[in-house]
Length: 152
Image (cartoon, rainbow, N blue to C red; front, side, top):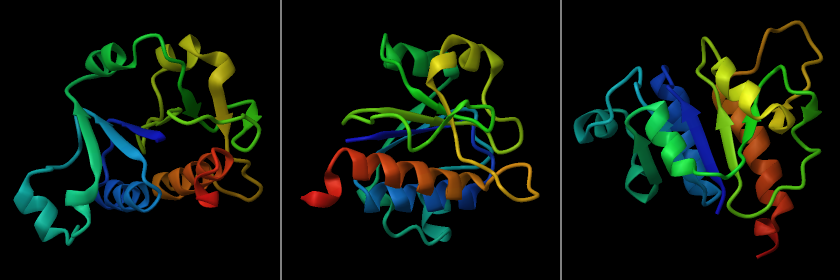
């Protein structure tokens, strides 16, 4: 199972769409606090996230707590500053895909910690970046395909 990590996400619909993708592609979603929204049962129900009970979800109380969970594993960090394109790595089951906050991206300490694990989605047109939910869809689908989950 792949792991999708959102670093301090701010926009509820992005996280909702990513949660749907994770359920649909059988991936585990990790959220690193602080979050820009509430995840209580009432908020989830009000947002119409009827698939939410099927989501494999872990909420980490801080970046430090996430790093404790991560241990010595090496994640893939998705950033517009990545030198490799998202389709170049050879993904394996249990890989961890980290996506930055919508407004500020990933912390420099993380991109400096794993400089050889930075990947990007090529931007050909006149935009600064892709929407977070769209970026997750692109990378998660490629990784899922590579680990052979579509062949099952």
